[in-house]
Amino acid sequence: VHQRCQLVNETSEVKVKELIECYQEGIQLMKKGARYKFFIPWELAWGKNGTGSKIPPYSMLVFDVRLIDFW
Image 1: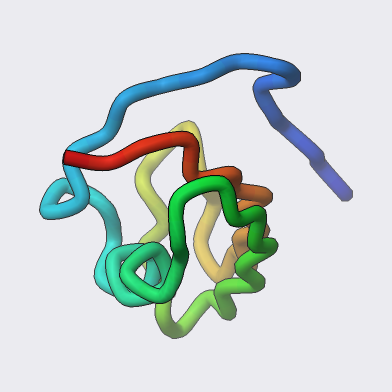
Image 2: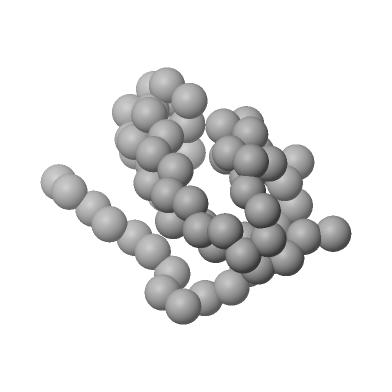
């Protein structure tokens, strides 16, 4: 199974401390207005356990992120 899930043209507010650690580290490299694509190997994402029904075990994650603003 190959699965791709994404929100298209949606904006969301997130608290950095609630993100997985590798995402937290990546987002700190960004400047306002920057767009990055993070490729997160399963070992740095949710690992061999996954998150239950949403993210299966051993899943690589890809985040396409545009940092609109921060405070």
